[in-house]
Length: 486
Ligand code: NAD
Ligand code: 6OD
Image 1: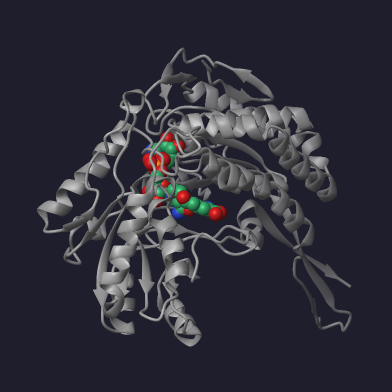
Image 2: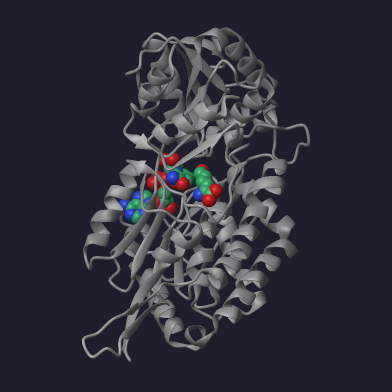
């Protein structure tokens, strides 16, 4: 049994709230341990620790030394690789392979990438003329923003948390992380790594708890927090933005999506099915970039649906440590209720269920898990709930289209704008369509292929701002101009 404590000012602490809650394994419902719940007092202590760190040795580290420390953190994650894999498997129930090959290595990669980026991105300078003929020189320098509140979701906990913590620290800030209440493990473990590699006290803090009236809300409302970076639901982003308005704190939001894939009849079927099989079902469909709307050019429609059905039916649900398992559970019983409500609504609204649609039969030892069947629908109207609302489960609607313009129109007919993928062997068409889909990131003949130097974020209701490469530096630093009269 593991108990999850806050990590504040370099120490693990239960805090003073006296409150704690249970963390259960999604794959069988067994108890992982208890998580302490932070309130206003714990958040205030963490903010004071972070502010003190910003006045201490951390503030005087050179960029080179900070970059070295980022690499040491990455190495620390790699050294404790199996601990991170185990912690994330306990929290999310996803197969070991997903952790080992994708989510945990990316935690280390985030620190390595920003160690390089912080050393290699320059600032601007301008020479100007002055009436006395001597001129002036302008140049910009970057300074950390201060204390950053980092509010995280549960679907890829280490990847998404370090995607924000790594650039924030590389830029010289201090952070207070509020992990999702569903996934306390890896953020807590990272506290141990921070101490092992000598990150100064107060630079990395973790306070556990929920959102409203708990650690999340107290963190975003605290006047000692200089900026807030958040990944989660669009509705939560709206609440956080209201808190951030007090004191005019900057926000960076990565929010929900209702992402489409556009498959043209000339697409390479092997490439397409491999990518869409992952984008619809990886992580039990709980990936913000996942595909829930698939548009297929009519001549390919029947063949595509049959191939995706075969992909879905080949998935093997099982415990994270079972080598045969390729498909994990949803994060919680509560989330399963939400996803199942869409399964019911889709049928009520006229869907043809190609495969799935319910709860799979699982062996007795897994029966307490939040299992659900991967599900494919056809035949829904464009305004059906399962076609317009983010479900965040292993399900998708497949719809035929007849022209490029029609496909672009359908793909853009959503309040979201996070990602899209296009499958075609016609390069000119790929460029043309990609430029017209109103999203933050479009993949051509792939999905979730990430270069950490590129801009990442969403349009419309899918986010505010961009992170990645220089864009992260824009958010996590203040750019100051210095004008020198010569
Ligand atoms: P969520 O919004 O319910 O919770 C996210 C975090 O916010 C949690 O830590 C939660 O405790 C906290 N929170 C909730 N209410 C709060 C409040 N009022 N004030 C402060 N904090 C609060 O999201 P989730 O269910 O954990 O994650 C799934 C959602 O995240 C999906 O909508 C998914 O699309 C989105 N997501 C987006 C991206 C992206 O990059 N765009 C990535 C991953 C997940
Ligand atoms: O790859 C990333 O940087 C990123 N933010 C991925 C988001 C995945 C959403 O579930």
